[in-house]
Picture 1 (cartoon, rainbow, N blue to C red):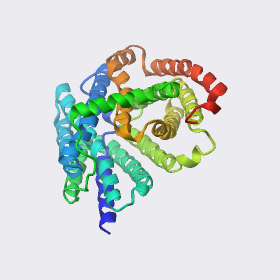
Picture 2 (tube, rainbow, N blue to C red):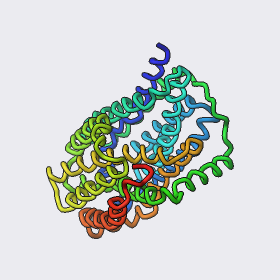
Picture 3 (cartoon, rainbow, N blue to C red):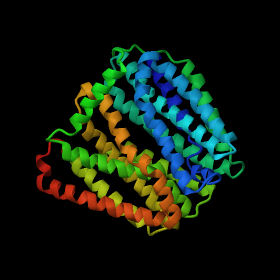
Length: 393
């Protein structure tokens, strides 16, 4: 019973953390302080802060405990959201967003480890994937509801979505206080040790027998991350949706993602792992291009389909990555993959914003889609010729 209670509390904390009332309105809110160049810069800052905290957050979780890190993440998120809500300048918004993103890194580094450790104390670690899958569905449903509410309250007062996040984070803080710290069997790692392990992990990604798979998966992941980091939302705004209709759009999107995540295994059962990823990536690129010449309801439907296909491809990618990586460097390698996927957007975010300000988001989306096609063609040809002989089909 205690174990079920603990798992339930972790699920509640996760739900509060993902009560993202700001999701449908962040572009509209940022544009009150800057242009699209500034919007892209703020999103790059957010991603940088998040990625920069994932790895040290994992080490910190081992040193001070998962419970304390969840408590710290909740407090930090509440503070950051409050700063954004009261912000009167671009600089204040940047500070608040950075603090919230650091909190996201702390949360990500601790919540999965805490769940797994608790299950392991009860010899139930084989149930981790099933339980985490259910929590993912809960997270999507929470985000869906928060999107609907956030889009509505923004029309009343532009600060309310951020204050809503602060309140939800404080609720998570109080729930986290009641958690019991699980036993940790892993020895504490030093930072130099981590660097050595991370280096080994990166080396494993580019072994002779898997380097083509790795490069292709990273390439697809980079495009997915670039889209989800800002282009998706900016495109929705440029379609002309208001804060309330954006809230409805995001709610429908998250509901669809909840269903797709739940049935992802059944959806991909008929495809080989890597072949399925390629297929979904190609279809996604087609949707990306078509959305660059669409608008209105058609554009909204394409945005939803785009998100659904990327989620399925990412779930498939996770299986391939884990099949390629040895257990001794799994955590550090997966963290490295996340960082590699996000770095390109961070480096070119400001330029992307300037291009959007100059020629518009639709032209940029079409260009990226064509570029993705061109880069995927060699891998598609290679896979059709040798796919049956690859080690992670």
